[in-house]
Length: 80
Image (cartoon, one colour):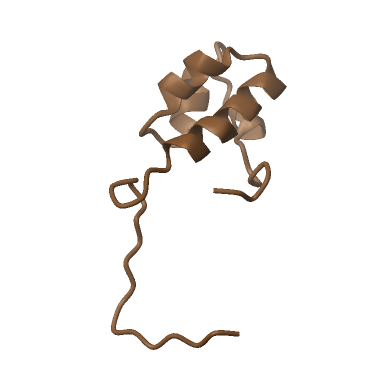
């Protein structure tokens, strides 16, 4: 194991330092296909939004129980 000593950590959670778009598109495409949604529309709608907000907008009945069942966790393949 490598030991690293540092004064702080930098987390890039908004894609500014590292472009996470390909990973986001890959995961949402797999999710859309497995749940019968259009992958291109799903990826377009999901960009920059919380997962639950995207799913709520896609599920026509907006049923909280159904929405919670469709949240894409755990990660599909662990790759980023």
